[in-house]
Length: 114
Image 1 (cartoon, rainbow, N blue to C red):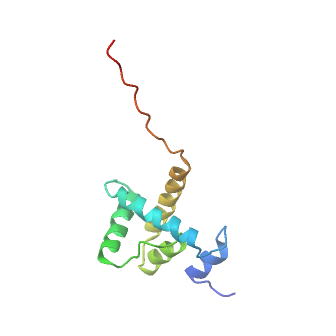
Image 2 (image 1 turned 45 degrees about the vertical axis):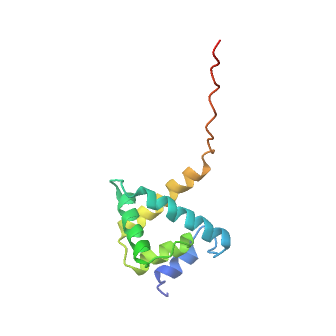
Image 3 (image 1 turned 60 degrees about the horizontal axis):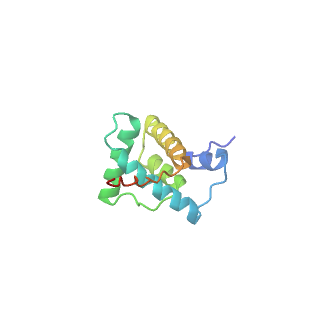
């Protein structure tokens, strides 16, 4: 039995086929923008945010990426199991936020002098 590389395992056992589409890249890029806003958190997602933000600023990590490319970056840079778990948790949180309805503030009616 052949032992799979991590990349092969991700592709083989991914619940969805790995596709590098424009939509996947857009979604990953929006995730990176969101993740960069999480640097002040005191949990594993905050730590991941600080690491990714630092990599982006140093030019070691492109801002236009897919979810798959982000995971491959983490794996290729020997991110710990906890770090990869933080990525999965962060992506899950990001997915929930994306599903929230957009709230547009309503203008308050002016009170007329009567």
